[in-house]
Amino acid sequence: MKLGVYMFNLHASGGLEMMKRCKDSVVEVCLKENIDRPKILAVTVLTSLSREILRDELGIQYGLRTHVRHLSALALKAGLDGVVASAREVEIIRNHCGKGFLIVTPGIRPSWTPPDDQKRTMTPKDAIREGADYLVIGRAVLQQPDPLKAIELITLEILSA
Image (cartoon, rainbow, N blue to C red; front, top):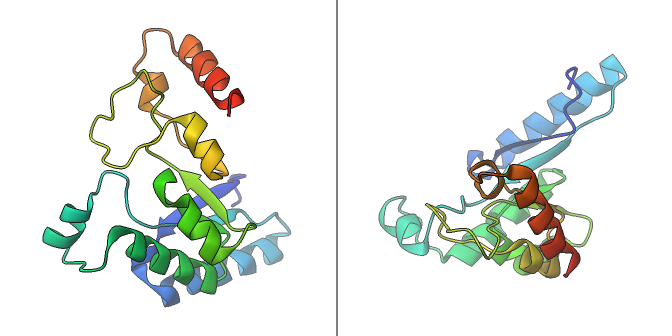
């Protein structure tokens, strides 16, 4: 916060009490220091996880979308500003948590890049159409021979949404 952080995240899997305490502590420090409160987001289910991994390795028996919706609802109840979730879950989060709830979407892959280790990806154009507030685009830019050209291509794709 004192470093000028605009937004940060924590894991929703830490539970309601942890998320509430985090928000309360941040509010307290910001009031004491007279600084703007950063946006606090909860990570729902990593985009590198599939339904099978969630069930077989992590022991979560709910469907992926159900689990994301549940974790998003916990973040909302804790008073957080939004979540980090796959663009594939934007609609279910928006319907459950409302329009003012921020959704940051990693796993964004332009049509001309491979999904790599990501299981639940979406193109920038489609993520914007779904209603994502922020897109996380890393490798699609950083692993290109000309990162600036990659940003230009991604921007054109977004503008076409």
